Length: 624
Image (cartoon, rainbow, N blue to C red; front, side):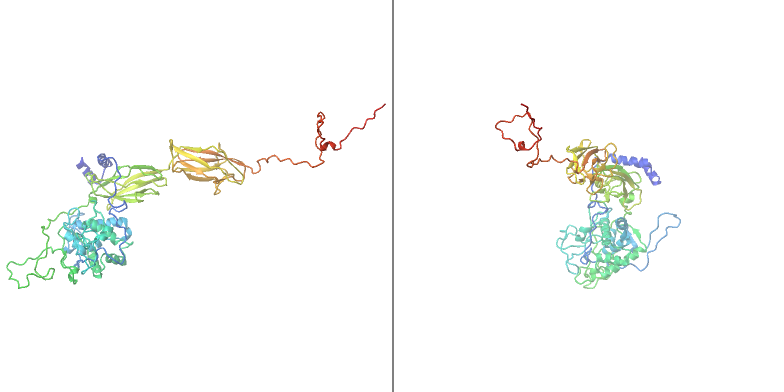
């Protein structure tokens, strides 16, 4: 099956079923899903670690102004070979001066660093030839490419102790972790970073979980980011010069690096690792008090003394180390010269397809964590997983959903099973749909895409807490508090966006055009339920308006929850006045006479009113 998959992939007609089968097999072999951290420091869009600080301005440099190789490129230009006659579109033949040759792994690291930095800082316009120029001047391209399959030098490349004797005076900052020196710092690795600079700019570009200054992939990536600091545009001569001088503050250093930079731009070719041309002349050979030959790599072809040569003159057998023109062979590594190896292919170069390995569709409610994360599988031409591949995950669309750390773009590295998982994903406050796109860093392969949706928080029930009627007179505010509880499937529903609207009728809930309003004079507002699922309108939040009538406050929530609350507005004079208090009668005011049937008590005194004049019948005259 695997050979058949490989043939189909190599023909460029990758079958969806084949990829799906390979991905399914990978996914089935995985443990229960766990969100994996990225290989860099915080899940940012840096397949390569931190590297976002700003280098010191005016003090210090990447190398601590350590010594460097001063040899200049040859005057002849490296030829650009069009190809072997008769080979059609076959590979180009790369030949030319030995000085134009760059070891395979070192060249791969420079080009890979350029691609990664351009993806995160396109405005910097970093060319890989600049990294090659600095690598040539700093370490002779990692001592002629003496690195293992992962790009790590066989032996640490260390500069002299920066003790102030001919160099900067930099006390130890790493407790000897990188340079083995607990008294003073030393420049370390093929790009010669001092430990304090590496602590800020160190990278893990080869995905092995370590930031190693002696690894050419890590060091080249760090150098690229360092050169691009302060928003530099290296296509501008002034920014280019400033970038190089930030590496080593020497005009001669600047001119030497620029010479190699221009030389490599005119053409280079790849040579096997371990066979690069080694420089000899170094800047500290000319400095008083320097340490000549401390870390100078050896010439590739030392010239031993002839066995038939006459005996040397007295005093000439032990010349000073590093003195030009002597016949003493320079110090060479004890191990034999490594056998030339074939060019090393980076993990990304092995990938033939990137496919969705899990969670093609992701859903969450607003302001919550997604239960899963995007997972992508890197496969080679035979359908097998590829480990240590940097995969970039990017949120595409109008959304405030973010990866852990508030990032919209992150990078993760595939595991031994070929699967890369993004960091945790959290939905924002904005509902909607968008896409997460996964791509292989440094490659132009098709992307793996994930459909993501964020829905509003819901409540299927809204109930009022308390039954006190809400009433107010025209021209005043409602003095009662209104509290409503939202639930969804019986559980409290916090964070739900509830819409409130003043309507004229409960049976025909059209928006009211008069009557009560909110404090901002509108008749529509939105509220969000609290952590206990309630929303509260305090006394004074609702104004009665100018027309006495019965209205309703309509509350609705996503999920179907609806509630009507009666609002009664009364006229300001509709309440009757209390009964008036009787006033005492004035003297002489007529009052009701006692009932004729009432018999006055003998002891009673006639009331003042009894003396008041009353109408009497005409007197009757009696006859005798």
